[in-house]
Length: 351
Image (cartoon, rainbow, N blue to C red; front, side, top):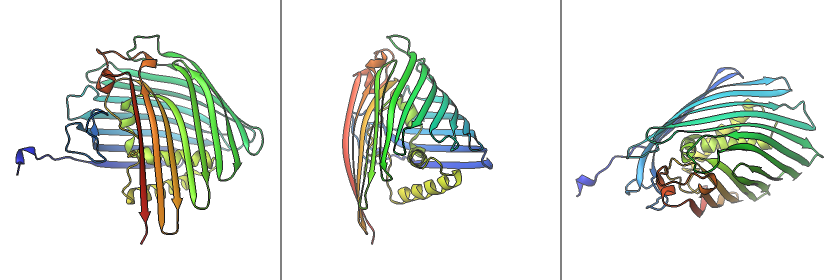
């Protein structure tokens, strides 16, 4: 009986993946409309479209790319991505993005040694805030010590441009790590290194049994909320693809696409939101370092599937020297460090 409070909210998740020239030229497209939190400290709901803390966020991206296999020696990829994001509120985070990725990775012909090289450049042009640019060159090596243990390492250079009150955001980086696979159903990956903003660590552990699956990870990444908002439509699909490529390195592109399609359909049919237990991505124009622990445990029975998730994340803008009342928008205008944690559970039963 209060018609002046009626609202209309649109939601859209759309994607298209095209192959114009077989095994060479592709195009990925994404579009997303959703209600997203302005602040992590306001009212938050799993699908809340009626509280004052939400804005309707629209984003889309077009990503043409070339991917070519050079026999068994190497695989190369050249990708360009254009993205745009806007909201229905007085936000200073509306932007367009231009990203370039060039990479070359060794093929199955290299048994004991694996190698790769990559160049990335991400540029975000804000409507009412200073622009940001992230650029890096990376080289990596992988050596097989035995059939179960691999040594890994990488070196590279960051050259970034964003508002900072500290030193120039650039410098060399390195990591050293190990990949241990004691059996087909178990893997452990660890690494440590240093970038211009400090020491970095990463961990990944996966283990499956007949009834259970465990997946624990820790990551430290330099990122922006803009980059994360532009990924939600394809985030689950991209996650599945990356996981399959890492666990089955010699899988063919066609077999990979088939498996990813099946997983994505099952996930969507279950009505699951891949970002539901990942934390609140609030709107800000500030670059930050995110440190996140994530854990997933599943228990599988003939007719039931139980899954449990937990996460803990720290978003820190102080290590980058980006904290400024004049430049920061969103929650970083109030605090340099934002901490979030959460748990979630799900039971699926097949009649």
